[in-house]
Image 1 (tube, rainbow, N blue to C red):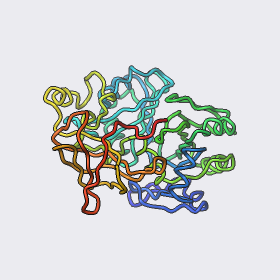
Image 2: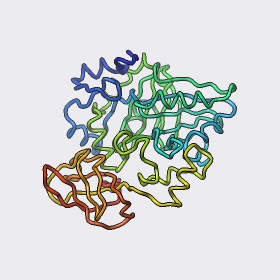
Image 3: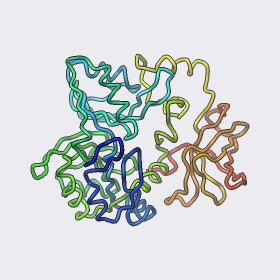
Length: 355
């Protein structure tokens, strides 16, 4: 595996290339965007089971006395909501309440965690944890010596149980042995389907991926992962979330704990004073494909599409974007400008696709 500022490749790169993967730069990594094609891969995950190489995602271990207290200051969700053996969606914020990154935390024990940021923000997140860590804590960058795959789809739990003897449970974390290989796993994912994400020792990961493919999983690229997550209304950092957007503006207040974390005072002020912009979701009422950066209207409010595409499952255009001033949580006519024409849309409450 190459892991330099110039180019990063997954431990699974050779397997992906042998499978005919088409590679693109993704957060500094050469990752497969598709194999057979995005539509076929999207359908496989919705109808059966697909496997994604997501080794670009961050992975760091934080453990030792005081770790929970440190992470409680750095992350906005309340870790006391989960017990050991569970996972949680959370965020790291700026002092102004903007989103440094949205993150999954795997909690192994009282003061023993894995923190999984987005690939683009791995260095920022691990640096922030190291700055706040006490001398009693151990911080370990796990990404360089592991690969990570996501096995997703309605048939994923059965396939994982056949291959590993492990059945994923939603937002539960486990460690299991497979032919002498220690695998860390969680019942998490980014598609809205059942399944799990597995961190595998880098040297063993190609053989494990081949086992999953031989068992019936279809190789899927990040193009399908994007259309799948959009149908669920899941936010993508860098498009739907960034340091200028707060969880409240993004409609993700449920991720915010009671306070005491970096950015909590800014969010309290925003609750008191009101929002100046708001994320809305919409579905087009006529033919067209909404894209990132297209002009967006909601009543008298204006803004831009953050994420948009044609939904392979639903058969029409869907998207999310920010408009200001805040149009409120309900109502208002929506339209998207596509190639010089304003296309009407309905405002909806995500997910677009109920699972």
